[in-house]
Structure formats: structure tokens, C-alpha cells
Image 1: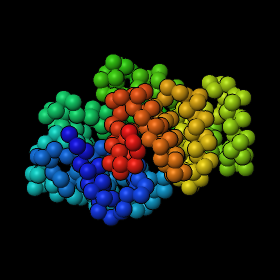
Image 2: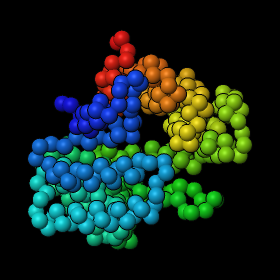
Image 3: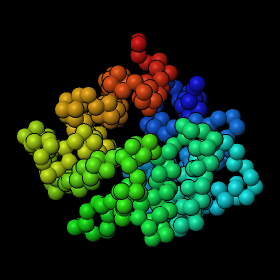
Image 4: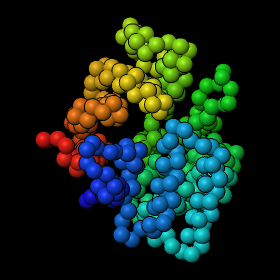
Length: 313
């Protein structure tokens, strides 16, 4: 089945641009915007807006809070008018309401997700876990899955799992709902609180010096986050700052270290695109698919590249 968003994007680009070079919006392709024929299309559009706002590196918090309020009211109107019919509708409504402001929003999100899963057992159970945890915390109880984290607004604060009773459910139950095991959550917290390469860069350290630091460090014992995710995050921050050459250098290095990590090749593909190296970019996305064939995002990028017919294969 064709991806609706990709089709719309390519149709627009074909109509507005002569095909001299590929014009690809990666943020659009990353978002899974598939709508079934019976789904509430207006509600699906709200979810698209919600997720696109949150995917931006330059998120406007005050604007997002205001838009969240408008989206929540729209969802409540849909519910009042009985226009939620499908599993996707209930899930989409739950996603909007779990960005709510109080326990009534969160409780409603839980109920909506329960309806979604009742209609479709393959619906996103992680969202039910997250809304459940958020609701419990909002009424002064401890979360049970471990999906909610916080960091106080000061330089010395660290990320921490919000108040939790890990004994209420088993790791098998967490796995069923797409949540990490309790031990994995502890490790995740440790990594989240490591220093970031972006901090080193902000202090005036050059990209070359950072590369030397990465190669000389013990990747698993460093006080910096030198995981594939950590290095990728630094590369993507450089991308957000439009420092595309520097991003390419960091992300190339990441693929050499973590050569079996598909996400690293996705990130490199985006950097290569920004630097006009389209053939290499395509090859990076093809490598990502080879490493993780079930990932749809690089497949959509490859389809987008091929639609411009600038390569021989």
C-alpha cells in the first residue's frame, strides 16, 4: 500500500519543481501518516500536527501548549458528536489527550486506548502504558510501567524516573506493552545522565578534537555518551544548526564505529543529502534497510530518490 504522505509530497514536488535535484523533506517521511478509509481524517490531521510540532529541534513551548489546548477541545467535540469509530480513531484521540493538563484528560486517554485495543489487539499498547502511568502520577500515585521521566530546570539536575513502584507488574508485562524491563530502564537512566558531545562542542572543542576524543575513549566507560544514539544525537544537533559538513564528519565516524546500527546510516544519509552528495546518501539509506529491513522510513526515502529518476539504479 502506498504511503499517503509520500504520495502527496511527491505530487506536490513534481508540480512545483523541475527535477534537477531531489527535494526531500525527511521530517515528513519519518512520520507514519497512514489513514484507513473509515478513520476520522480530521482527527488524523490533528495527530500529524501534534507530532510534527514535537519533532522539531526548535520547538516553541508556549505555542505548543496553546495548540495542545485547541486540539484537546477538538477531540472532546469529536467524542461528544460520536465521530470516533475505529481503533485508529480512539488511539489518535488518546494521543492528543495524553498531552493534556490534568487527570481528567489522562483518565480519558486511558479509556480511549482501552477501546482502541479492544477493537484491534495490535494497536499501540505502549501508549496505553504511558497514559496509565501519566494518569497514576496525576492523582498522586506511583507509576507502574516506568514510561515517565523528568529533569528539573537547573544545570545540576539529572534525569530520573518519576515516582514508581516497579513491583506492581512483571517485566513480561512490560514487554507486552512495549516498555523496557526494569533493569533496562536503570541502564537507560544512566546513559541519559552521561555528558553529551554537544556540551564539549559548545565549550569550544573542535570537531577534529571531538573525533580524536571518541577514538581514544573507552566507549562503554566514558563519562560522555558515546553510544550510537549519543553520537547520532550530536550529529543531528549539528544538522539543526545547519552545520552540515561537521555533521557529516561525525556521522561518518559513527557508522564506522557502529557499522551494524541502521539508524546511524539513516542520519548519515540525511547529512549527505544536505551536502549535495545524493548518490552516497541513497547508498546510506540502502545500507540502513539492509541492516534493518522492517524499518519503513529509509524505504520511503529510497522511493523518493528513485521517483526523481536521477540515478541509473
